[in-house]
Length: 228
Image (tube, rainbow, N blue to C red; front, side, top):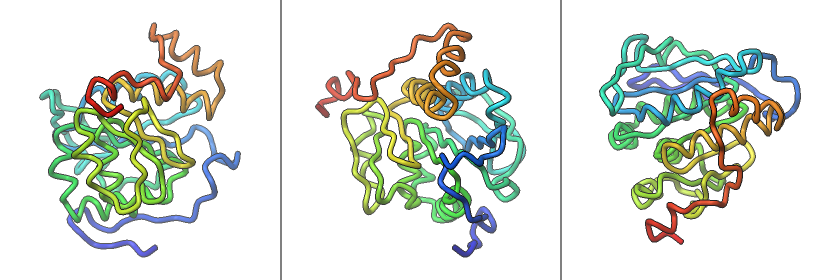
């Protein structure tokens, strides 16, 4: 795939083997995509859990520029690197938030996301971050879910996405997507268990005194929002 020029510069692509082929060097490079209006817990819930395993995961915050980025809550977070300078990641996490509403219609951002994240071993999202993945084409051919209060909006994106209305999270090969906000922590716990092992996931959760939901189909918010 050829890199494209756009608002965010030239995309980065590399040839990568399947994400569970066993040869991913440690620590695995996890890049969290930030943007104006991102939801704090979407990003920092997973970050808190992954940070408990520093030998397994190296975390990088990627933003429009290596400078403070305003969350939906108003708190500013400093990105480590800009979109145009970000290295090809092993694992990508895209949060949701009100900022997704404008980015879902931003061709330059979507082309950058597609080229940069497309060859990652694993592409994940929390909440309406799945709308950005879908709009960029990264969910075509996959099952996915999203925030249940924004489900109708998020599911208008993507040309070949099988949207799952009742799911705490959906794991489909190299794509993992969660429901709204706090569900991202449950998805991350399941992801750690899948990659590193259930004991490591349990210890990471215990270290933050967190009791995760472990059933991806346990989704009371789908019922509460008339989706099940």
